Length: 133
Image (cartoon, one colour):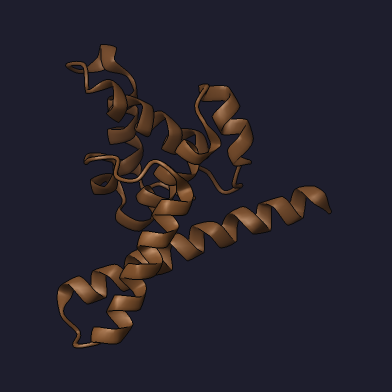
């Protein structure tokens, strides 16, 4: 997952409370998760989770949210806590987008969000395959 220079700066500011007025602790954690996952190589979710002392599902969720919505995805309610619940909701959104298919902005946003989540999942599988040989 690659970050633009602006995204990198914002995430570093959010993750480092001493540099700016303290962000909400959850926003700081979300920013640290994304920063830990950033770069040309995709680090294993389990190692990021261990490093930050959070559940792997937490890392997975915020990675996906960032890939789908970029910075806007981090500054909002957490939503479902289980990755399976997030996947189910995304699948429902994508199915609704294909059923309605009237081209409305909400349908397109749901489809784009699902594509971004699938891209993130594919990157995870590619990294796992690379590590396993």
